[in-house]
Length: 222
Image 1: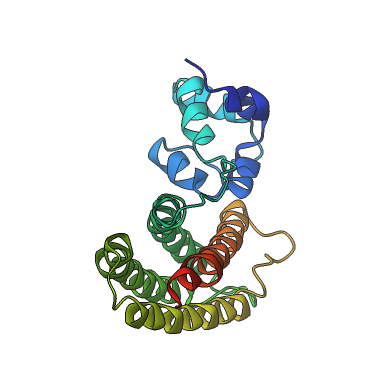
Image 2 (image 1 turned 135 degrees about the vertical axis):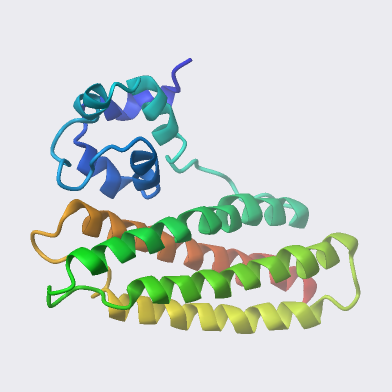
């Protein structure tokens, strides 16, 4: 069955390079199917899959899963926690490694370019490790304490707030390293897809922190 979002976007007629830029996460799908979104980015998705002998509907349905779904914030704390994990934690874990791979490719291919983000892949690896540790502490310690109504929940909330400040500084450093995530004129598809993905990552992390700091934590005087 075809996902209705596929028909709304009409992925088949879109240039594969533009899909990679507009939908962070698409690059992983294209690499899996050996579809060239960089040098061959001008061809339509339908043309690209035809060359590879791949069913267009299969790729379109995978891409449709990347379309952000509008989700209302639940009223209850447990619902907020579930949303934070599914919408933000799981997304960060899925997208950061792919962005690291893209960064390594851009650094290698464009090492001589004056605006090449040299060191970005190492930066993202550290960010992945730090954010992963933070999310693990929330899922294994803080969130269970909140669910159980633990009386000492304010201490881990305070620690998470402090780490959120660190994440904010990391995003500032990321913007500085990537010229505010604006690719240079004439940048290749991989470079453009990388910076598009980084913008989404930054926006997601800001929203993630906002929900916790300003909506969830104050319910527990944290």
